[in-house]
Image (cartoon, rainbow, N blue to C red):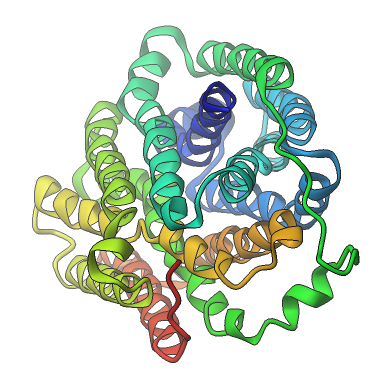
Length: 392
C-alpha cells in the first residue's frame, strides 16, 4: 500500500506542477504566441473548473472501480494529451484546450490517495497523511517555479513541456501496474447511496463556503498572478519570478506539513482552520496596503498567504469525519469539488477584477486583486465560525 501511495504522490506532484507553471511561462507565451495575462487567467480558471467538474464522476469511479483504474486512465489520457497540446500550442485557444484537458487528467490522483487513507488507515491520522501527500506532492509547485524558468530559458518552453508529457505517461503506467485497491465498503443496510445522501448531511453545509475560497488566494497568486505582479511592478525577469514563486511554493509545502498534526495537538479542527485562514487574510491585507514594499518583502507576504492557506487537508479531515464509509469516494470528491471549483470560478473572476481596475497607478490592479481575495476569505471564515467541530 505504501508503494501504491508513492506513485499516486508522484501523480499529485504533476497535478501541482500543471496548476502552477503558467506564472513563469507568462513572458514566453506573450512573446511567442501572443497570450496575455487575461488569457492566462482564463486558462488557469479552466484547469480548476475542469478539475472540479470531474470530481463527481471521479468519486463515483473510486467507489465503483477503485483508485487504480480511475487514476491511471484519467491521468494517462487527459494529462498526457493536455501536455502534448500545450507544447504544440499556437494561440490562446490551444492553451485553453490544453489546460482543460490537464485539469481533467489531474482530477483523480489526490482523491485516490485520500480514498486509500480513509479505507486503509486509522481516522485519527487522516489529516496528517492528507497534509503529507499535499506537502510532498507540492514539490511540483517547486518544479513549476525556478526549475521551470531555467528549463524554459535553456531548452525552450515547448521542449520542456514535452519532457513533462512523457513523465506523465510514465507515471500513469506505473499507477496502473503498482497501485493496490482497498476492499470495497458497503453500507450497513446494503444501500449504495449517492450525492443526495451527502447533501442531506447538514454539518457539511457550513464547511463548504470556506472550502470554496480557502485555497483560491494561494493557488491564484502562486499559479498565475505572481508572475505578472513582479513583471509589471518590478520589471522582474523570469528567473527572479521563479525565485519568488519558489519561496511561496516552499511555504505552501511547510504549511501542509504543519497543519497535519495540529488537530491532535489542540484537540480541534475548526479552531486550527479558522485561526490559520484569518492569518491568511492579514497577509493579503498587507499585500494590498504595501504592494511596492520590495520584491522580497512582498515575497514574504506571499509566502504567508501560501503557508496559512494550506488548511485544505485539515478541512478535508473535518468534512470526512461526517461522511459514511460506503460514500468515502463520493464524499471526499464532493468536498474537493467545492475547493477546486471555487478556485476556478475565483480565478476567472480575478481576471475581470484585474482588467476593470484603474490603469494608473500600475499597482492599483493588483491591490484590487488582493482586496478581492482577502474579502472572499474573510467571508468564508465568518460562515465557518458557525460550523460544528469534530475530531476522530
